[in-house]
Picture 1 (cartoon, rainbow, N blue to C red):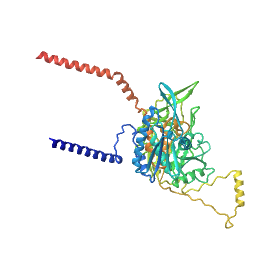
Picture 2: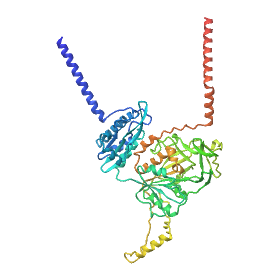
Picture 3: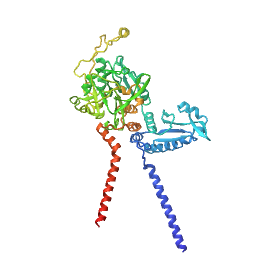
Picture 4: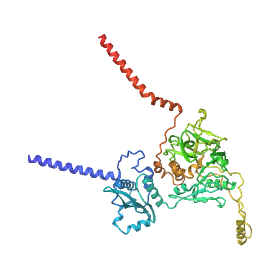
Length: 549
């Protein structure tokens, strides 16, 4: 009996040791190979493939210091756990190149001044304790350090954009330079510090935006990673030549072109010939002098007497999810965009031989156009013929080797400087001493073919001006995705696109609407009636069978 007890006890101890060993092995393996189920729609609690690529590319240690107060209000108690979980995933995929440290600033009185100098302030929060509203000051910041480079996230109040913020900061501290984005500055065109100030402030987090005035510049600087051309009203041949040669040198350009001159106060429009029309057609894209209307549209606000009214406006085309290209990262995760008073594009197939074309987005199949005589009134009722309704191409990307628009042509001469500049140049010329005593003859070569590069053309510029990027989030995300695609690839695109959560209703035909109304009004009654008739028929048959028996 005692031998059985000893044997049973030995087996029991051996089982515990084996289970402990198995659990230990699983724990070690799970540190490197772990499984998690994230059931949120946008995988909010799982880091994206883009972040994994960034972390795998780290070649030295990045230090992350999380400055979180230990005493946080109850509604933020889960925030620390969520941040810790995501940072553990970051640490795992960084393969030893990420150090993470949590610090409670309250433990060091001298730290408050250092954090303020770093750009991490105290956050004042409202707390209810013992049925009384009180205020408390806490820290919710983070610093990302790499060598002498430093970036901060001043306050983390939720994790919805945490991955994008952190990954972009890691990219920024590990990058050797901040890329410059040029905005073409022209008379009468949108100004970077005025109509484009929202876009400028959005870009400043990760890029260095600057205005490019080709009347003053000899050429587009080589350090401009991408050029944004926002519907110029007038351009000289010389300025067009400089843009063309920038592309021929491998430069990437976003063309946002209007072919309709708008007076938004009077709601009047007249056709406008873009000075870039012939050059874009040479590259293979024609912007048509028409305005697109769509049953899929956004609400627009208008002044009516003393009141402001907001109504669905067909000229503010709302791109639906199914009308974005599925094969291109810059748009394949977008839910919607809004293009106000947009013009359709046409691809000129004979001009795009050897060029890869991506149709970025289109209007829905319930769209039509107006041309010549424009009626922009929001009160107008539109009944377009069904045969005119079809999808219209509104945005396109081209990639490949482009032929110069100026190949075989004479180089446009440099513009004559103003009188004051002429005097200055004359003085410099008189003071200058030629090396060989003769005047040097200058010849300007033309680059006739580009290396592989990219262009984007959109038949609208207003979607990134004024308040549109802030009001319609898809507009902002598309613009930043396009800039990223041109400059750093698709590293941040997959993360940023998860922010887009607009879910526009799918547009359906009038016949389908009528059918749905009929089903909603009479469908249930008809089903109940049919069910009652079937029950009546079955009972009647049963009764007849009973009588026959």
